[in-house]
Image (cartoon, rainbow, N blue to C red; front, side, top):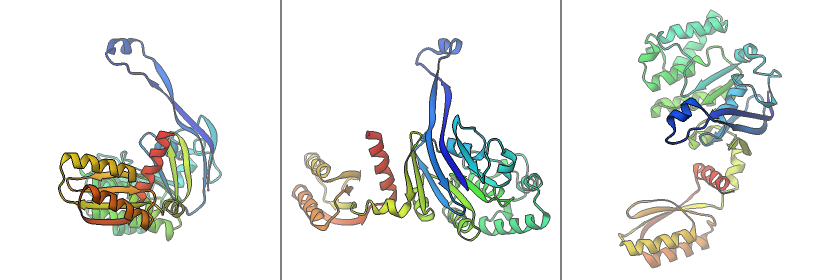
Length: 332
């Protein structure tokens, strides 16, 4: 359904030098910045992919090329057999896009008028439009805000309407870039439930980008990790988690200790694993070898420095796995 073959994209950006405002204004210098550096992947019909990366990794640039907004400098993209940039109209009729930071609805119009314009643009029949609005209202609770101008909506309300607007024409491919931004906990739960329903029950192909790793873990069977414009992992979410099953998180609580003892404690901890966070009398430690005998040895070493009052051993979180991968990449 989607075939991406060795695509590259770069941008020319101005160089800013400190203390040289007038010189920069009169004579600008530019450099070429590579945003995407030869990535390839394929997505089958009905897949729900988590597309993960740090800020500036190339996620949004990739999505824009898939949407046909940007053209790759080299390489090729085929969406349903068509080049999305050369066939933007055909591509747009079959895709829905939600950018968390950018809206597609008309800000000065009531939500329902924006929806009617989208209905007209995509040639949606009256019958289909009515069914979809009822469905989307049931899923996202948009009925009560349909008559309010978009600019007067809260961020969470606007995101619900933007999400609904991206589905008016019932696209086969949906690109979601931070779709839950600004949503309260209940509305977010509904939005994530809708994403799952669109994929599992409606057969939609979904590319989902977010910085919330819990959402990725809950929804996506497959993840693609991108760093500095290159793919560093493409595979099953469970397989990625399984490769880190030996790692554990040790959470300990201890009696108050002085600065000298605390320094000694830090030294012991750094030998045992990676410190994730610390408070006045508690901390979390990531242990690479989480076997029972090793954990006992670590606890004994810590007990020599301070008295442990409570501890807990848990499996590593998906968020920590992703953080580890990017930390290793940064050092390589």
